[in-house]
Amino acid sequence: MSAPRQQRVAIIGAGITGLAVARQLSRQAPQTQVILLDSDTRLGGKISTIRQDGFVIEGGPDSFLSYKPRGLGLCRELGLESRLHGTSGKVRRTYVMRNRRLYQLPEGLTGLIPSRFGPMLETPLISPLGKLRMGLDYFIPPRRDQRDESLAGFVSRRLGREVYERMIEPLMSGIYAGDGNQLSLDATFPNLRKAEIEHGNLIKSMLAAKAEAKHSTPAAGASRWPAFLTLQGGLAEIVEAAAQQLGGTDIRLNTRVTRIAGGMPDGGYRLDIDRQPSLYADAVIVTAPAFAAADLLDDLDAEAAAALRGIPYVSTATVSVAYPLEQVPAALDAHGYIVPRSEGRPVLACTWTSTKFPHRAPQGQALIRAFIGRAGEEDVLAMSDSELVGLVRDELRMVLRITAAPTLQFVFRWPQSMPQYTIGHLERVRTLERRFAAHPGLFLAGAAYRGIGIPDCIASGETAAANAIAHLHHYPAAEEIAV
Ligand SMILES: Cc1cc2nc3c(=O)[nH]c(=O)nc-3n(C[C@H](O)[C@H](O)[C@H](O)COP(=O)(O)OP(=O)(O)OC[C@H]3O[C@@H](n4cnc5c(N)ncnc54)[C@H](O)[C@@H]3O)c2cc1C
Image 1 (spheres, protein in one colour):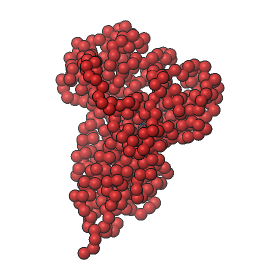
Image 2: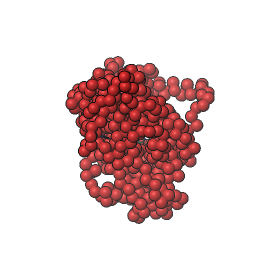
Image 3: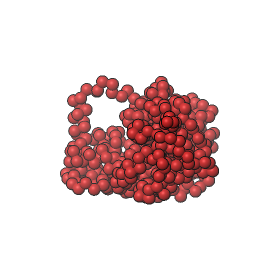
């Protein structure tokens, strides 16, 4: 009798999710052959850092939330804890644009629920009538039915349209680049609905949170980290360190998977690959964006492919520019500013990177990053790079009175990059989970499903890896499969 062959797992996509899968597999199933495939020429997907002339420039994500465990957890396991930086403690404020002027965002809007009365009552961003409307929250009964609703619908219903348009919409846009009238409350900010159900309204929920904070002593081991973390040399450090911990993983870049076929004799899958021979895998973890995953699954499962296509994506771009500080007349005294959609401007947010993360620029230099493109406003991305830089320069001339040409400029385009958790998203994800359960050994992970941020992506990759390992134990390989 011949010995059973080595089992093989294929991971499609080598962004942070795929890397988390590969790392977990190489640690917990070292006897398994792991193949990591990506159509791009580099690892990391949306994580893209450039280090130049003492600047650290992020093209995609620039930090991650410290209170979601797997971002910080993975950094620690990769030996990167001493490399972590929180946002600068010296300056904490963020501005919001209104009628082309900047106003401070009231403090305490954690998780989009106002957690302090004072700043909300004092802010000039909301009119006296808007503040009165906000107070009506206390008297509005909670919605009883269980249907999903839009984020805009919920906030407008509870706190009024003004609070939504002037504060919550631009905050939400900074995360999803989305349209709050389309985004699902249940999938994006379930804490808001939970607060309404548990306390009847948001004001009572805020009071309850305050009372609890007053009476509780900080838990031992409570995080000493600020809410947002990054690394000395940029988030690419995570990618670089993870790549060092992939054991014998067979990394194949420039390798685009075109189709996943089932019905193999050993219960596994055949992966068709553009311009290369197909390969067989006992388990497959798909971490490519939902629309790319849909193309792979058309033949295997039309219902899953349709559910994947039901997750829309928005295209965005980031433009980073640098100036000697003496060329910046205005004080960069905030982490940056966000721009409500109602302002009708092409830039939706601007990070004053050298203030938010001072280590990212050499002494005496300012580094600024603008975000362009959001749901329904993606046409701007048809502009050339120099036009996009021109548009950002116009913005900075108006807001910061900068007239000089930047000494450094980088444009990063992110076509179809931001998955939109639209109304009914969780139902679509449940459909996907049901469909994937019908294909043992096939798993889905990544930003499109249950969390778009880096810690959620890592967690979803690690869960998929654990499920794949359990599957391999359950279905040991028999003999060599010819494909
Ligand atoms: C501009 C921008 C700013 C962001 N800012 C933040 C932030 O500050 N903090 C934060 O936490 N999150 C942020 N995000 C979100 C976060 O970056 C992403 O959700 C996360 O990086 C996605 O990781 P992923 O591995 O799931 O997907 P991806 O990084 O998209 O990786 C998927 C990989 O699949 C590959 N692929 C696609 N099709 C195929 C195929 N057919 N065959 C083989 N390979 C394929 C792609 O080449 C890609 O490398 C930001 C996103 C963007 C675009």
